[in-house]
Amino acid sequence: MLNKIAVIKEIAFSEKRVALTPPNVEKLVKAGLAVMVQSNAGNAASFSDEQYQKAGAIIKTDAAFIVNWADVVLQVNSASLEMPDAVKLKPKQWLIGMMDPLSKPQLIRSLAKQDITAIAMEMIPRISRAQSMDTLSSMATIAGYKSVLLGASAMDKIFPMLMTAAGNLRPARVLIMGVGVAGLQAAATAKRMGGVVEAYDVRPAAREQILSVGAKPIELELDTTQAEGANGYAKEQGDEFLKKQREQMTKVVAEQDLIITTAAIPGGKSPILVTEHMVKQMKSGAVIVDLAAERGGNCDLTQLGKTIIAHDVTIIGPDNIVSSVATHASQLYGKNLEHFLLHLYQKEQGLTLDLTDEIIEQTLLTHHKEILNERVKSLIEVSILTEQKLSIESSKQERS
Image (tube, rainbow, N blue to C red):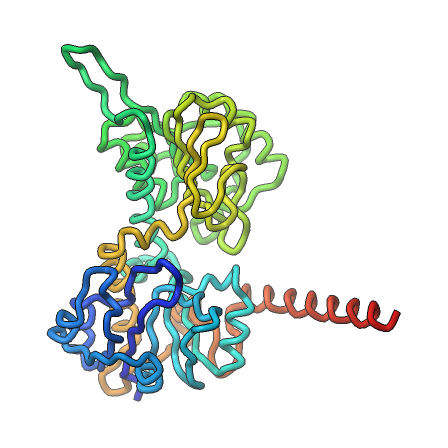
């Protein structure tokens, strides 16, 4: 019976989040699961070993011992398993975490070969009964909020209008580009801080969502009937569409004090929404916070993990912005995991996988050495064909 859960320290550089918080542990232990937590795993998120112990967790220091004991290993950033100092999992073990499978298909291929059951939390379907498990939305909420704070601290202006004896100050103008969960949270935060907020999204359905947080929708003369995918996320658009979009957005961009871009394509490169030409038209002292920096960026000039100044505009490319709000990010992620694990748990059988359940079907990447997710499988097949082609070409060169 699978009922032993391990929480290990995150391996990825600068990752401060932890997979479960003490309240999550308490709920899982009460349900009948055993939880072992690596010592200091929660320190960076302000959760102590003592708190975990009071919640019912077993505390151990050696990660290898913990992993060997467990049936299920929980992580925040499982993509870090590609790193050389990563903990080695054992066959038949479950791994649950965020794996970025559409960008890292080789990791999923490796997990399948090791006979690891890999479950990706970012693949949770957008259906009503899975809302409490929706990790992407949880993390995007944090990212959207923090992006506004980053932008505000980099600006040489304040957000709200002020009328003082010394004169009046105009409110800051803020543009949100891409209105998913992160963009809506950014718009709402900027509005609360007193900014004049506008927002743009390629999906027609986003208009009412923009209005709901007090922002003004930007409407361009573009055909957006095919802009939204079946999962509710924006679809990748062609070059001609993006060209027209940029042309029409240039005047809008030039008026802004702060621009926050959030448009990311799962498994693909982020679309360029702000070109260098557009940056040149912006006000001196304006700021861009590019939340899509980890996937190449929505701005031509974005550099991941760096803040640069180009054409008198500050451009911030945050790397793992959610980790900088580690306590609350861990609370949300831990709650997502708690709900997911309790969804799988049956007292008589322990943790089980119902392959007919849509939630399991969407999140289960590998099981019994098989890759089950069709999209990931196709990416791996392309990768294998590329490897074979390179190998053949290399052999030909050696013979010649």
